[in-house]
Amino acid sequence: MSNTIRGRAKVSANGQAEIRLLINHPMTIERIDPATGKRQPGHFIEEISAVHKGETVFSALCGQAVSQNPFLAFTVAGVEKGDVITVHWRDTKGENDRADITVA
Image 1 (cartoon, rainbow, N blue to C red):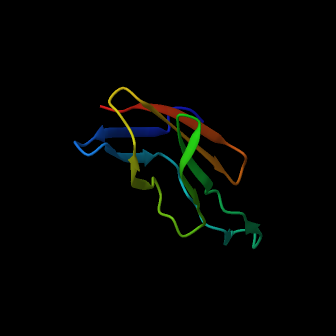
Image 2: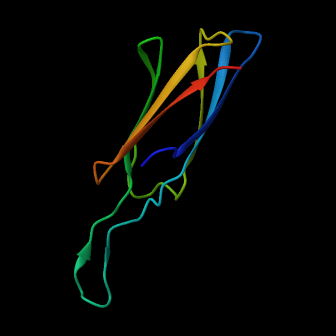
């Protein structure tokens, strides 16, 4: 998958930046296929992380309960305009994506 992450980062006067992310992902749950009676595994994001200047500033483990196309927001201290926040996710099928978000 590619281009699944849309994000914005804006720094405030106190040196903190609010990062907002929208990740395009189906986030399906484990279920039983009614036609065959067989178990269908879920397809959902397991891990999301954000890195600023080589340091992980946000990390989350997700499960089936997270909605389709999840929205996340978090704050990072010590950020300046022009800095880059790198966001990465990985799902249960081994698919992943990454995006660089420039702080405005």
